[in-house]
Image 1 (cartoon, one colour):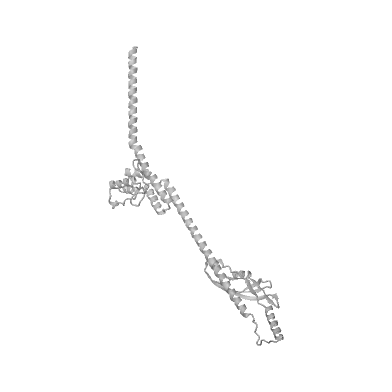
Image 2 (cartoon, one colour):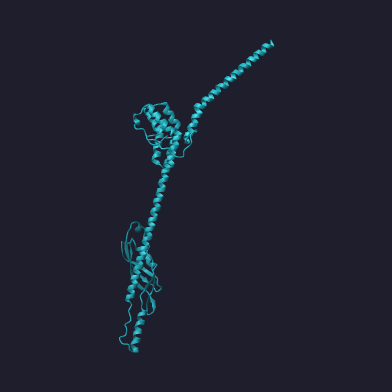
Length: 339
């Protein structure tokens, strides 16, 4: 075999391999450039748009104000609706505001032209971003707006599992808000009841103090007073008799209340804003304590009886005396309950 011919054949094969390799590299380069312009760059723009700006545009911290909705959306054709939808997408108005968002425009396109590929693909690709918008509405507890956005998502893709998650979150947030509101109402009601109870107890204590003051005044009036001598030159016998009479009067005294106790307003009567009174009879023992406490009359019957008896049971008196010796005595007292 001719060696020169063999070398030529090998050289020819190497040249063909180089050409093939160059061709393959060129094809991959063309595919890479196409992928950049057709896939990667649009995706980056979409990501940057979702983050609030464009690579060549500074991000503004202020929330852009949505333009007013078109005048007559129902009269628009498919192209006009697609144009408005693209504007809404650029402004990230996926689901809001109502009447001027991408989802509503794309859904109207599908109403006019079922199966429209552009609208169908846009709704599918934008669904995750729109779901985030609905979740933000839930987190801010704008429940009506969140429900509206979930309904729009359901029109676009009713079987998407994300809808189940969003509905569960919305229901949980609503229940949590209801629970918090009920707890606040219960706390306010408890505070009002406590304030009303404190006011009622204070009023009852003030009234009891007035009653005790009036009773003490009556007792002071009932005490006999010494009659001045008509003659300055009274006999020693008359002076002795007067002193004896005065000593006898001082040796027989009535019981005097030392410390009282405000009745506790019954909880049921306090809630019902109910008033009444109780007349209680009791014995004042020689040690100043009360015993044999009974209800003589009451209005209404059996509502304030126990509270009145408990209050009298806590009374302490300076007992009545007879000839200087402490003795038991009987007394009746009317205890009133008013709000």
